[in-house]
Image 1 (tube, helix red, strand yellow):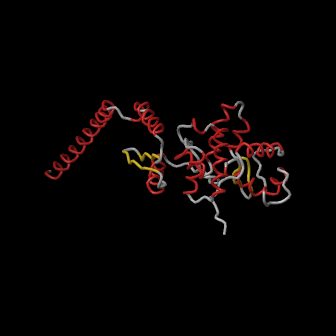
Image 2 (cartoon, one colour; image 1 turned 30 degrees about the vertical axis):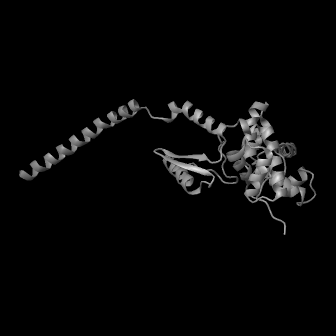
Length: 262
């Protein structure tokens, strides 16, 4: 019985973008919802099997297509890639697409500077078959070259595909994210609870990446750390308000006592 690898797109991101461009050129309204047969016809597939299945899976995995009603449509990421006026403008959107597949996102988090043989060994340890590990590592490396993933320092926001992102109050949203970080962070991550949230740091980084992380944190010190003077100033602003409230409460008590004596 052949071992099945975890899911990953079988098509290069570059090929997926060209297929998306072909689909876009076949329709007059980009925002329109398309049924699967319409997409297959636009991409010159006679039926939904073999290459067609892999192509549709890749377009969804790279977040180039998104669910819309009972069909699919070009996603905001896909539209941004198609509409970019230069390679520089297109790069951040390509990076989002390249990291949308979970298998590739985990490689970027923990092993983006490793050699291809090392990537294959890592994928084998994560349950990939030998053939699947070789193919996935090859596609990841090609996508890396296209999107310059090794130059990316911070992971972009990658919402779940097909889910409408509801607006939540800032406090509730922060609490939800913190709870999710504590409960759902992978075993490959270290969680550091802080006063304002949880810092999540990947395991398995190289010495060069650790050095980059420390240098980046030092450069962000002004933005991350509350200055003691500012904290004291904020506390002083709150103190008068507390004193006023205490005086009002004392006056009310005194008024009640006088009323009882009378």
